[in-house]
Amino acid sequence: MAKNMQPVAKRCKALGISPAVMGYAKKNTERNSSNMMRKKKSEYALQLQEKQKVKFVYGIMEKQFRSYYEKAARMPGKTGEELLTLIERRLDNVVYRLGFAMTRRQARQLVSHAHFTVNGRKVNIPSYLVKAGDVIEVSDASRSSAIFKRLTGEDAPMVLVPKWLEKEKNALKGTVTQMPARDDIDMPIEEHLIVELYSK
Image (tube, rainbow, N blue to C red; front, side, top):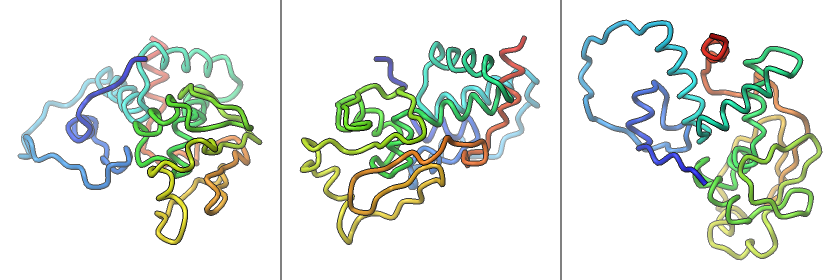
């Protein structure tokens, strides 16, 4: 399985996004921090950066991203919005959104190691697309693990769960109550630039 091993803080700075979007609240980089004058980016450069931003945040490689775009293009509605909601439905992203992992990278690893079930069945495919009504739960065999024990009890970290998901308190269980909408994606993305890039 291909992995994106780029340095988080450095890449976030290059793409103009906050490390907090990746789940890294305290990461930062001081490298080349001086406010140097930069050349105005071309239209193509802006389109490419927007695509790279989404790929990096969600941990998706080019071939898979292209596949999502082609699928979104066949769906009714705006291609850019359909693309983002498709990616938002990935199981690794849902695990992260439910607060079962600190970052999407960690969520991807946990899913790959079969720590989660969807509707009672173990799923170890990070790109698995959830649908409305799906129940995501930490598997029985994994509940005793230290990484999940910290998520229950009085000291459990507070997580802001998006409105399309519902998390049961102290149950290591969440439900997809509805399909995500464009408004549910809180990261600043200009998806029309991605559509323009692929439409050439």
